[in-house]
Image 1 (cartoon, one colour):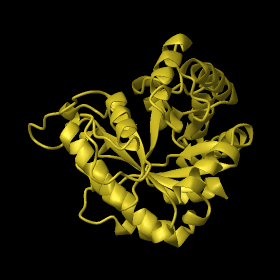
Image 2 (cartoon, rainbow, N blue to C red):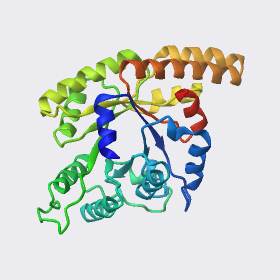
Image 3 (cartoon, helix red, strand yellow):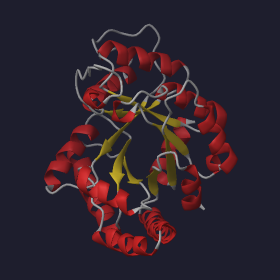
Image 4 (cartoon, helix red, strand yellow):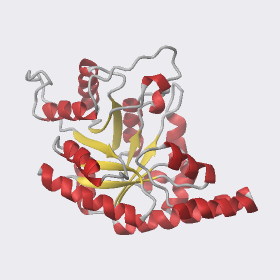
Length: 301
């Protein structure tokens, strides 16, 4: 399953879809929604978020397991450094490995101060590069303390994330190099909204690959459709590392003056055009829609 995914990532068109578990004891409604829309037939795999914004959600590892069991396609399980120390991270990885959860998206994680749980405290024994180091050890058959594991894990495929934009390209290149040096097979960017942005990212990524001597890694362009003016304004004002072209805000503003329906229509047209252009330019795309699978289905049609 994973070997096929990595082959597609390197050599063919590759599209994955993000899922976000709910504040719930079941992941089944998301499975059902994907089935109803036949979305699993339009993507090569899935990803699962790990309690974003430190809000309590269903486990990313169990959600990845359910996706794989239902659709026979690989799922990238996000693991953050926020909620586990080295012991917990390694224990989770070992347990997940036996159930074939072997594509891991390493994140530092949002601050626990944002949590909906009273007095929640973050662990943060390191940033995402520590988790990548742990995975590197597991792939060598040892734990992070250097002790040989009684039974060697099946190969784990580490993924990382990256900003889509930086005022100083050298800073972005350095951060990419640090992740590439730890053996990631793929780097998923924050949402990209123009071909120019995608081309700049790919150029920076290629330079980082040369510096890190990691010729096997692939850049995966992230995309989040914008169909509302407020979304464009929020991303521009509050999310570092993302740049939304002024043209988007201008067109959405003019459309909103006409009606909400016109705003949504123009937003979808902009999103669909950009998504298709990105996929044609660099056919390695990760689609994020905040569980709006109907919108995802329209984009993938």
